[in-house]
Image (cartoon, rainbow, N blue to C red; front, side, top):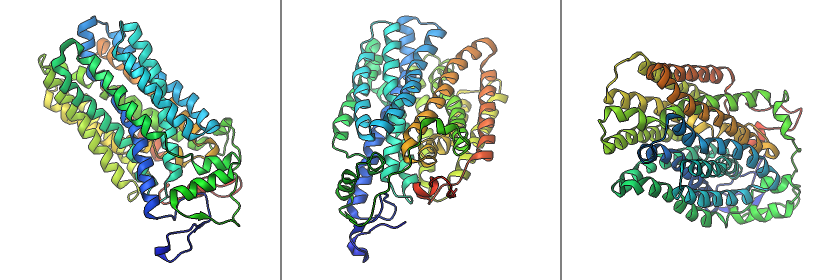
Length: 462
């Protein structure tokens, strides 16, 4: 499959495919960077909004004197919402278009992010966090799908993993905001939550002018619209004699047929294991470290922030190796490193503050270098256009079961059996993730989306 390139390369100024795998014009590169940046704005907000509640939780606990169960529900409310949002709105993205849902979901960030900041009680905070979670969950499949469909096969890994890296940038930013607003006292946690709404409003206005994905337009019979978008983003004309192929319609139930079942089990399985372990660590890092900082809130936020920064570094390492080293070795190493780090914590029954920071940092570094970024790559690479956002939404939803399990189980296991028992549970989850990746992870680097998802009867290049 070929496509036109820029005149400076000596090739005709003509496109012959809906993909962008050989298009390398300056205009195309600028557009790809723009799509990636605006999509990363959404994942930045995901990371911020899901992490900021961990930063705010000690303050909320002091103000409202909430129980351990209420803490768990507050933390998990947005995760439950994102589970529903990913599955429901991911499917709507395949039906009604990437662009429409790409913009609409940001309105949820703005409205419900602001309402959480003014919640009058624990109940209303939980309700608003749940509704905010709908938008958070939706943005995963929408942004990942749109970026993958505008990327070339050589840069798709870099572009897609950039989304994950910005999730961790948002997570680190939550701790920075926590430090900045700390002098506000009882109003500090409300100010933290309001910041997310303000950032979402900016991203919303910047997303409005982006076009629809040509692959989605072709899949829905809008060939002329697809040609116009392709010309707009590349500066090249689509060859008139080329018939743009409408891909086969694939109903969502096909995810569980022999053609896709292995891919469905893999994407859902590894993301579930990653989220279960990662969220148990990240959502409760400030709570775990609190007894070791002797009531010093600044020291607590700084220590937890260090863990988040190391996690961000892990995602950057993965982002810069995914297209060179490959997806499969990266994700296997990721889960193995996560498991070993948690096991080392588990065997130490009298840890120090420094020990916990170093080992939690090691755990999230490994986790985010593979599982934490490839959850934006594998789900969109392994499924065809008409089911891509649905498949990504399903995997996101399953991962949210893991997230919810992690945040609900951890504090209650700690209360009943102690912190080490809880850590061993999540080390076991990491081990299961390692086994899943060894058994099922394919290598997809340098393959076009069409090669990875051929028509029925044709071999897949994985």
